Structures are given as C-alpha cells and as structure tokens.
Image 1 (cartoon, one colour):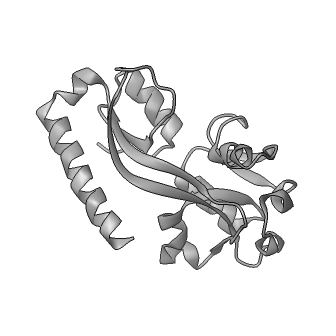
Image 2: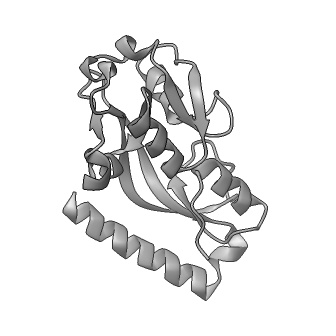
Length: 178
C-alpha cells in the first residue's frame, strides 16, 4: 500500500521497519550502512506564493525574511527553507505554519498569504501553477537528490529490488522530460 506523507515521517517509519521503501531527498550525514540508497534524480525546491500575493514581487530571500512561511515537518527547526536561507548566509525565517503533507502545503500556499518551498515539477504542474507562482530570486534554489531508501535487510527482497528498479526507470524518463 502507498501512503503520502512528508519525508521525515517516511524516514522514521522506514527506520522502525514499518515500511520497506521511503522516497524523498537523500539525507546528509547518515551512518554508513544504515540504509541502502538508490539515487533517482535531482530535485530543485523553489520558493512559491499564491497568485496575487504581495510577496510575489520579492527578488531576494532577504525580502522574504518577515513573510509567513510554511515549513514541512514536525518542528519549525525542520524544513528546507531553513537550509535554503542558511546556504545563502541568512538567518532562517520563523515558521508560521507546519504541514506534514504536500496537499497541506499546496492548500496553505494557494489559499493564504504564505511563502513556502515546493519541488519545481509540482509548482509548475498546471493544477498548481493555476494558483501559485514561482519566485525568480537572485539566490539559487535549494537542490537535493531524490532517492529510494530501504533498510539493508529489506533491500534484498525481490519485490523491493523490482520496485526500486522500476522507480529508477521512471526517474530516468522524468529526467528526459525535464
């Protein structure tokens, strides 16, 4: 069965042995051998706001420091917005809202006056792009690698190996389209 939830919860469930595969950004600083990681494709996290938002005029991250940010995760210390600001030498903004799903993130961004980070393919998809805009900022977006992760004992399962191989083929096709 498939369950949509944010990467942090997926990774926790994977470590507890509740799921066989988690798909999300490849985490930094994993202990060697803890997980089997199959890199799938690069992902770019872009800054988004609803269409018509006054924040849509921002051209730098510093202009967004006082905005109401939506973070994905369970604490305001989590989320890629923090990493984005820190990689550019800026203090991260305070989280005004925390969500634990892509649907929650889309709902707040498109229906309120929030700023958030969204994977670029989702932000550009017509279903989302009709309601939000991607900001063209001076600073580079946050980049990561989407990966399929499994515990070493699960990675030996034929079903898991087949599923991860299929994900790799699908990711290759996506890279050709992007």
